Length: 358
Length: 116
Image (cartoon, rainbow over all chains, first blue to last red; front, side, top):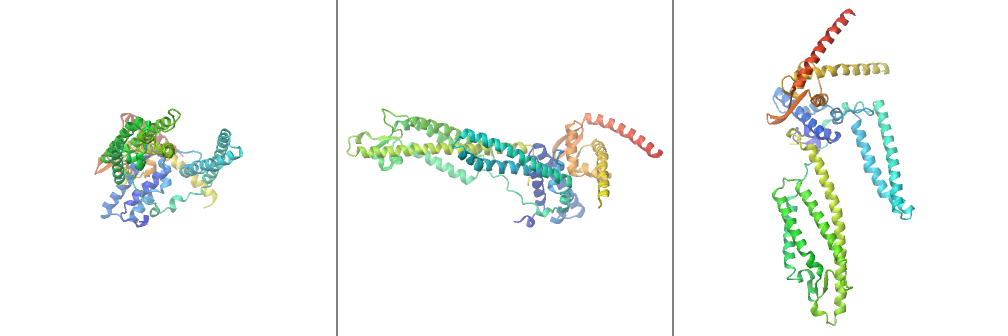
């Protein structure tokens, strides 16, 4: 649905508050101010409705919002005082500065300038890091200076003085969807998958065919499996408990984040020890995961079986290393998600109902 | 608008803003001798001829609260959460002193204007 065709005229108030919030610093104080602004606007609408004797339409609500002022201007009044660049322009200045420094300069230096410098220094990582960081620092300094200068000129020349007169409430962006809770279907699927995995793991010691397939006829598990079997089973049980809790308490929005991070950390430690343990050789032979079954050692095909065992061991070792890398990346993403959640909770924990978008 | 008249308007607006700032603080503190929430406070001030926009009132209330002159509380009324403000004991003391000062300035100014 387009913003202008929204059926509920009160949507406009929520969209307006959302637009004001965009220009405000993300602090608890600002959320509180925004809540009061929302309450004030709703009281104005209520008053007008009792005066006119009917519910206000979109145009009448637009009039109230227009009288209140353009979101950026209102945010500048509600926000902290600025000196060098005035309160009206400061939110835009801050936005442009962040965009240029964090989302343009830093990626350009990491993905373009850095590799180019690495090539020019013949692969000297230390020198590359120093040169790139030095260039990034001076580049940021120059970019910030130019942006500040441009905004300083705009401020002095009143270039956007009429911003408050030209804005139209119906052009406000539509409401963003509320933060997604952990998907029910996704959790159910994960739970089913892990229960199936646990059953499979419990059956494997007595039915090696389940993991080795036809090779179970001539291969057997190496010493590695007996060391790590119990920790892997326990970890799977812990994952099942975690998913069950997440399913039963879907309102605990932080639980899936930190419990998954904890799970990743434990898995990472386990995989790390697995890789370390798999590196050892016994009597000069390297067969950590699978080895030749005792009853085929005297077989004519012993050499062929040994080759197959070696291939399986290498493939499993590569899988473990890939899992370790994947867990590291996943862990970093989960830390980022958790920090984002904590920050968001920090800003809205004392947010009263009046600012919530219905 | 010519540059000269634009400059005059700007100077006037700045001076008006300065003049209003102190008066608004006094008016807000006086109105908050009895408990009110933001909108009713703004309405009461407007009814008495002192219009104040949302972007000015709410930061002012926060500032007065952080100075210890006001106390506030979020409470539900008519199924909506509202933040109610009232003067703190310290605010009451300061308001009395400010009103005394205001009376003195007003008397002096009236005298000066009569003499001019």
